[in-house]
Amino acid sequence: MRRILVAVDGTPVAREAARVGLELAGRVGARVTLVHVLPTSVAEGETADFAAFERACEDYANGLLAEVHPGNGRSGPATDQVVLHGEPAEAISKAAEAEDVDMVIVGTRARGTLARTLLGSVADTLLRQCPKPLMVVPESANRVRTE
Image 1 (cartoon, rainbow, N blue to C red):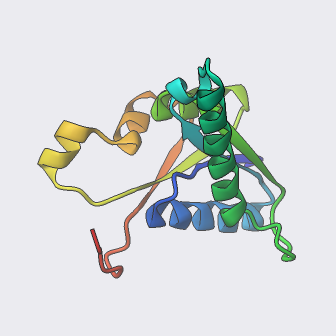
Image 2 (cartoon, one colour):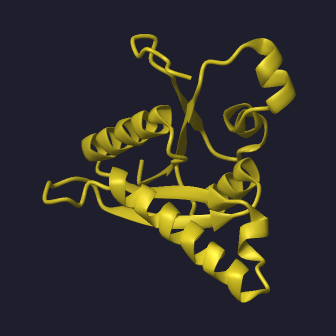
């Protein structure tokens, strides 16, 4: 295994997926690409106000990726940070194929059947369309949900 792509969206389970991906990469000597996906509409601003909003979204995404990046003085696997634009599952799948990664890692929250049916799930969609092996890190049963 040479390359691992980990999708990060700011949720606790995504941070856990990042931890798992970084730990696995450290064990096998793989490079990690941490990605966050912004909606396409954020990438297509035309006004000055919208451009400022777009920059703020990009800054947020880069800050989020930096939070889970191991480069804070500790040794760890080689890591890249990438902000993608588009529909999350599609953008992650395309990046996995383009970057020729060996595995994609995502987190998934425990939701009821109705919520998953109505809202969908990036992890569920990736299970159907991702061209690379996928590891889905479930929400910890030990963590108390505060939603």
